[in-house]
Length: 417
Ligand code: 5AD
Ligand code: SF4
Image 1 (spheres, protein in one colour):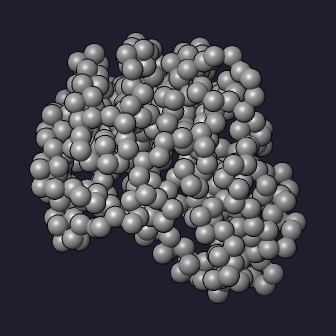
Image 2 (cartoon, rainbow, N blue to C red):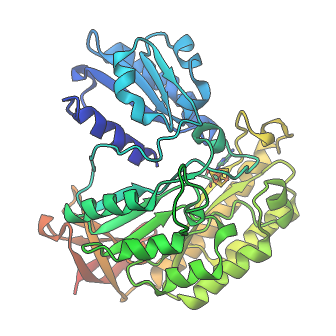
């Protein structure tokens, strides 16, 4: 979502005649788009902008954007007085105003830009990120996002479809729909709107000419009803990769986290999906050592991993975040937390090695997007494996069958069929 927010900002600035540069010493304006989901990136912010201040050319402005901008607001300028403006997530459409106003700070998490038509900029010609909702209505006890991105609002269907049509006309064959809880799409709009849900949206997007592949993130396990699974499985343009953020395999911990589902519900959905769609790859997010997590609770998480055999796991130690309920709970000893994280990651690596080895000799349909320095061209299979072949730029933007000759843990190497 931050990548797309950055594209929005770049588009607005191009409209003001700015050009992109990677060279800080040349820049008239230096922007940093921040995340606040875990503690580490927040710490990094201040050392990073300190470096900007040292290296920037005289008169260059520095702006801090994103979720940490939302949550720290004017305190950023207090701590780093050389920062010229602070623009919270969900306030990105005010960038032109920020440039023109001294020490502009805007962090209103209720600011509604769901109908703002951003100017057009895309960092990839092959794939288009398209926001479909802003904010999040869930109140997961560990998560700062509702405090930085505000309540969930769906972007009107006609705006989304128009954006997809434009991107597809410009050559993007893959559309990547974005939101905190995409499968809750249509629950609330700013203005009156026809009744529509995420399955309807997927079907409408897949009807647009030029769209060959559709991906989305993140869906919420709670809203994975049969209609959604049915659309996912049966629409041939929807890539067969599903992100299912588990967070914990223990029903007790899930309840404490206010996730709204149980271990049994999660397993039912994931295993049903595997049955309906054997080629699907399933990824997940897991937090270990949430306050109160016992050995038995952690064993439940490991049990879900054994049963679902995720293709990809993003795993984190619990990190207490300000403005959240869990911030004040008693932390689990860090040594135990680290041990659990290692246990989980080691077991996942073993599972992953098995999954990847099993791809040997299989054929995948790969959409190529990336020319690499090592003479390889990279892309994604329909089920989201990273695949590389020897080749050159003619492959970019094409979809080709690839037979896998060398499976590795992080990517599959193959040859064009
Ligand atoms: N501590 C650790 N991980 C967190 N996440 C969100 N908040 C926290 C936190 N306080 C993780 C969740 C989420 C992912 C984007 O980041 O797993 O799905
Ligand atoms: Fe955070 Fe939960 Fe919303 Fe995801 S669903 S953004 S974890 S509050």
